Amino acid sequence: MFDERSYDRRRFLRDAAAGAAAVSTAGLVAGAPARAATTAASGGAARSGAVSFRWWGTSGWRIDIGNRTVLVDPYLSRYDTGLFTGAFDEETPLTVRPTVIDPLVDRAENILVTHTHWDHFNDVPYIAERTGARVVGTLTAYHLGLAHGLPSGQLAPVKGGEVLDFGAYTVEVISSLHSRNGAWSMAFPGVRVSRPPKPEKISDLPEGDTLAYQIRVDGGPSVFFMGASDFAERNLVGLAPDVAMVASAATTSTADYVPRLMAALDHPKVVVPVHWDNFETPLTNPPTVAPNDRRRLDDLIAAVRKASPRSRVLVPEYHTAYHF
Image (tube, rainbow, N blue to C red; front, top):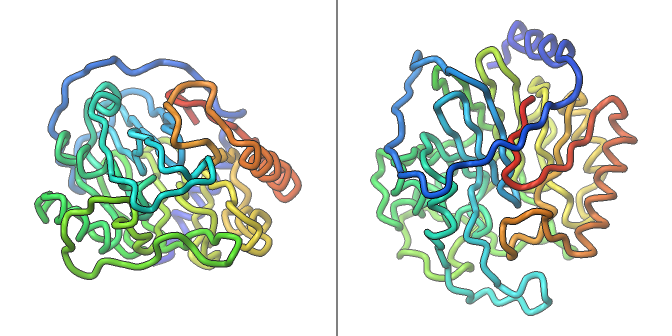
């Protein structure tokens, strides 16, 4: 339901925010032990401490709200499928690298999955099992979670339109769209309407429908997260986020992508481009960027500045703690 009062409050918070994003480079402690997720129902414990956002490449994020942690599309294993060398192999085995994941993921209470392609979902079952985190995603994500042995009570299927209350923050789920390739199609389309066999190769992870999310922190910013570069603009009306994590367009197949997106989001104060790095290289700075992806990133920045000149564009680096 559209709440005019909350919409006006979000606009006020966004317009009243002082200056641009403050940046610190506080790192994570390597080798920190895993902890079970904190159960946070409506009216749960209030946050304590700062709110930080760390980019983990592709459309992946770690959000720390005081002592509570939310992950978005955490893909850390980053192995070679040939995608960036012109030798893409859809039979590439799914690979999880605990030695890479464990030092970065000491805890999580919620994992938000935009869609279930391997570069978004690959590490989710392992992280959920390790931390006890709840997995929020499509019905496909639910069935893939079951296939990986996660209990149904740890999986929260959503469709879009839900506003989930976790006390210190809310998560609004938005029905969205996946980007199109040069043939106006996509890799691995399809959904899972029942529990499949355990996935073994990247083509076993279909797109499975696409979602976006908006996290609104109590007393803090509202931040919009995309996992793919298309959207249903009518579904974005009224969100008015302070910050928008915007996926770089894979092709020009989506008409007027940036102008329509900026207008639908009511011109966010800060725009953060994501999904422009080579996600088959190690998660070390500076991010590795293929030449064509560098051009796409430059085009996105130019398009945002033209369509939304008052928005600040912040190009992120891995692991850096951003405070909005």
